[in-house]
Image 1: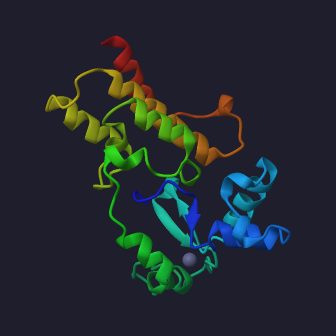
Image 2: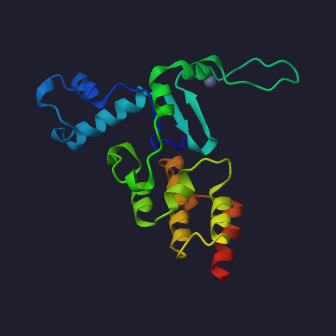
Image 3: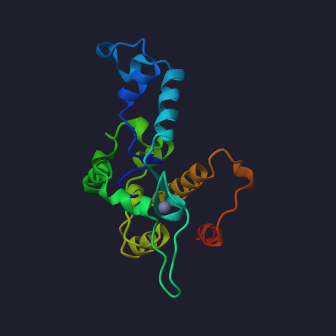
Length: 200
Ligand SMILES: [Zn+2]
């Protein structure tokens, strides 16, 4: 999950999707920017529909698009992912993503815009260090990583906190997709953290 900020993967390439959707476009003349905004939107929607897997960041899990949703578990045994989800490991496109090297922070700005959340991209570019805090997966929460970094004097300014809060909110917003932010419930930990900040 930390390797990508897309909502899923395994879809045919965008050129393929676009040419299938708009047969009038000749393959030789195709470029992403030659599509109208509406066409680009259609391609992105089709892409999401054809994802072979779904990245569920809020759950820290990746599901197969064909997830069986039910598994049989013996008493006392731990539940395993269903066979479709486990089958992802054997999927070539999935392996390719797994084996891809993580982009360095310095290179992150070169990740094509449409492949990532533009809001997050903006935040990562603005605040140095936030990308690592939010996207690195070492089993600890970003808050813990931040606390450790702050104690070690890693951050030169309080800006990093701002950036991290902004990024967490942007992520939560994406998770809520389409739901109003006004009713958003911040976690207790974040609440405490924010009031702590206010008292510094
Ligand atoms: Zn499954």
